[in-house]
Image 1: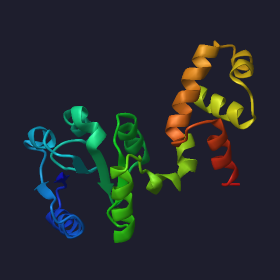
Image 2: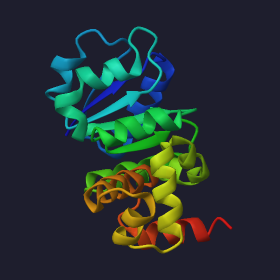
Image 3: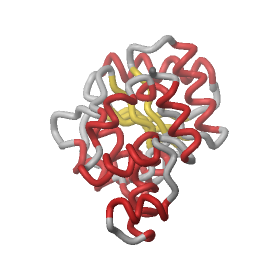
Length: 192
């Protein structure tokens, strides 16, 4: 397995590299402290651990550079910005691991990603903030979903097509990181 760590803090790179090598002795790990030449390195990596706050390139620009490899990207941050995480997630990033998390949590998260799961547990606890990411129309759809309305009922209520409702429902579910309406409703009920 080949791993690439992109983080401007050498200590973070060294710590993560040591942790991963201890758990995966045969792994090959490359660490970069700048964005220079990362596209070439990323093309060979099975997984890319990407710091969200590189000073030499903005995060969204970094996502553009890594676009062909997004299914291999694992975000790492001590203080992730929810909006940026959601943008990376919508582009195909596999997960978010907090730099200040327990070692076992980081390793378990990486293992889950290797097994094909998307891991964004770190932001699920802040799902109340997701509402802030919704457009005005998505907020109306969100409220209607929580009220238990069908797509047809929502379309009538908002005077839009069912197709448009479906598009907004898909976007709302993606923002909240749930697979269906039931999961959305349940996730909100557990908060109150």
